[in-house]
Length: 193
Image (cartoon, rainbow, N blue to C red; front, side):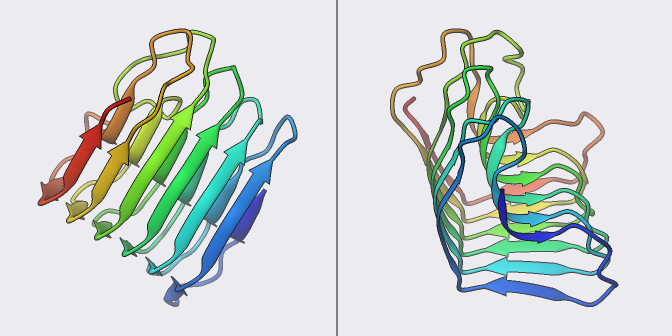
């Protein structure tokens, strides 16, 4: 269940997704992803700017839910000035809930001036509590690439976790030991889960 998805090679031109409102993206089924903005195959740079993404819910087994996901991008991603709220994975198999996910991104992404809040999952099966795992709660998860810039974001994670096992809840996570040159500055992180 995706609202905007680029799933086949679209060439090397620049793509701009800006000033949209995405509200109530829900997957009440048992499989498939639930991502309002999903960049899966794009040869050029992409700008995702000024969007409001709210109320993203999934019951699906085997997949995490995220508001913005860069899964395979040949160009640099610029993700700025987005308001992301209420992203929840409600499946009890402990799959993740993520605001912005770079699962397979080109080097040098810019993630700046985003407001991310109320991200939770409901896992009840011990799968992994390791830092940076995409099955946990992450405001921003840098899962691939190097030389990313993460500036001036505000991330507030709050509420009561219903997970029955250890569940990492991170404002920001970097998952690869080979990722280098990550520049993180002037962000506001609050985590009271």
